[in-house]
Image (cartoon, rainbow, N blue to C red; front, top):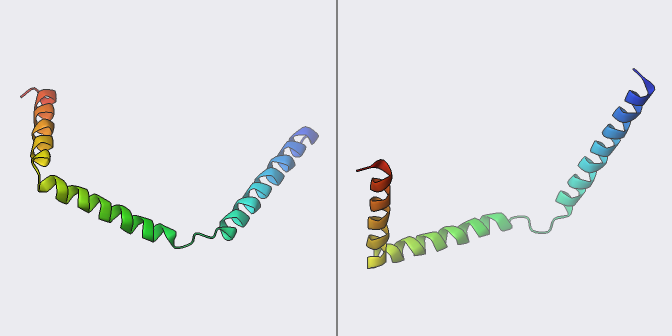
Length: 77
């Protein structure tokens, strides 16, 4: 292997190793472990509340009719 190629390979490997090490250190230092599950539950509750609100009002019917009309116009029906 030529000297310039060897130097480029060593620099690349050093850079990648440093990036991996610093990324792993950052992940280990994170303080928000377990927060993801709570966020998913919160988002799920919000989506369910929106769906229930749409089902209990005329807005849901209106939105459904609008979607049906647009889909029909795209399909040429």
